[in-house]
Image (cartoon, rainbow, N blue to C red):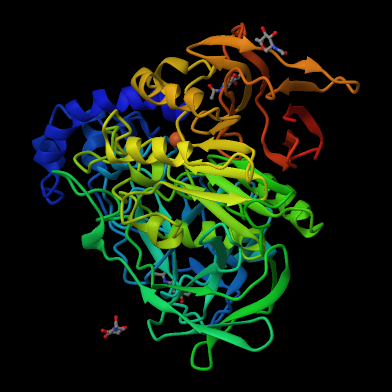
Length: 639
Ligand SMILES: *[C@@H]1O[C@H](CO)[C@@H](O)[C@H](O)[C@H]1NC(C)=O
Ligand SMILES: *[C@@H]1O[C@H](CO)[C@@H](O)[C@H](O)[C@H]1NC(C)=O
Ligand SMILES: *[C@@H]1O[C@H](CO)[C@@H](O)[C@H](O)[C@H]1NC(C)=O
Ligand SMILES: *[C@@H]1O[C@H](CO)[C@@H](O)[C@H](O)[C@H]1NC(C)=O
Ligand SMILES: [Fe+2]
């Protein structure tokens, strides 16, 4: 279990690493030999010429330039400026005289980003919980890929003869490789750079000329969220390189003007050492435009577009408002920990391998028209300080989030950082501290950095909290959730669903570090007192559903209905039913060998939940995103 075992490891390593970073943070120019005791992992790079002792390998690694006297080496792209908003660009490197697995290509942006060697960045990648091997450049590339990703490269299947000898024999043979990069409009110009020496000790061989996007101001990545429980107003949020006001045109000739905002490197948080968001992970977000469209009717389709004459318009998009709070029926999808993954074979910072299949399955379901809304309950993009990854995440969810209400809760990977006011002192947000999250996902909260709210759709009241902000007895959030849940009119919305990020119960192998007993101690009694029907959490990357439980014990178990489906009777309320639904993208977590008594179903597969509510029945289904099969379902009844 990746992230969570790392939490404790991180606490520990911070203590050790911090003084070390302090010493080195501004000292990239010092020769490494000044730090004889520093052991870099990359010391183990095999040397294919002679067996050089370690101390000499260390000296060799200080050579930043790749001395190359190869006159044939070329890097060519099959794209020219200006670039469209989305394109797959093929990058071909030719003229390689000796193919090796150390060559790689990075897509960098902006084109003047520093591509020098920054060895200490490996520690800063790891602070976000990403343990992949990533390129150690002074500015994180958008994407990178080894030439060996082309299966014909190492065996030189694509070869050219550069110099013919006597009798037609080839004297100099060179090899080439082609790589594909999925490029979306990130506003700043891009460049492809060829490196040698692997990710761990890169040096530059050649680079392309910069490529510009045709329209960096193009309004893109529109998504919609609820502003209240009436479903007569909705918030539309999108990204553009321009801060000039734009419009949403919708319905029959209605129009509303946007407000644009942005955030800068100074708004990111850090500690004694600069965080990725403040430093090498930064990418200019452009402007985030938002507008509230009004005079809608609940559960009704309408079309809209956003933009302006000056910057251009989005396509016409069809959207449906959710049902009004208090109405009879609701179908929504819910999941946590989705993130994103590249649509090409490149490496990006922090990849969530299940996200593409989950988004594809949900997009199919949304296109049937049967879904009213979506709840993504924390650990949203995992950009964690590598800001261009928000653009890629927003691009990924646009087919869903531009068509129905996409509601969110905050997770550790959006909010947590040392000395930033988060409950958990981990560096999991990479220095974002919730600022990008709150800019892109403006929920109906009371004010900045208080990301808790409630919303009603159909027969459901949702109480959405932040597990990353103080929830202790007497805290502002505690008082809010207590009064919010106490005020629910159960005639109007018979179902009360409590939503947060970190769970109270899990039988994953890492259970001890994923569950905070203090959180359970303070908040669980409120769930019982207010007769919460269903509790949804993420953070642990699997699906697990409990009996009606309190304080670690089953208070009631479901009965099988005539179709064999577990059915809980909440007419005779006993305790909340809890479900962990963090299985939407992040590498899955394993369960302990034996299920505890309270755990009724455990699935570690990628998927999402589909929840259907009427005033008498709440039905939850776990959908496997690869097969689209329902692998668990249960009903909660109320008369
Ligand atoms: C889960 O278990 C499988 C099989 O033992 C193992 O390959 C995998 O790495 C484990 N996953 C995690 C996240 O520990
Ligand atoms: C770099 O690539 C360009 C374009 O492919 C080529 O013209 C140039 O000769 C190359 N330079 C070096 C030093 O390899
Ligand atoms: C809009 O952006 C321009 C440059 O991009 C800047 O000079 C100007 O101050 C900005 N205006 C506002 C209101 O932010
Ligand atoms: C209500 O539930 C409790 C606990 O499961 C059980 O003991 C009791 O018999 C139930 N009452 C009714 C009327 O079903
Ligand atoms: Fe999490």
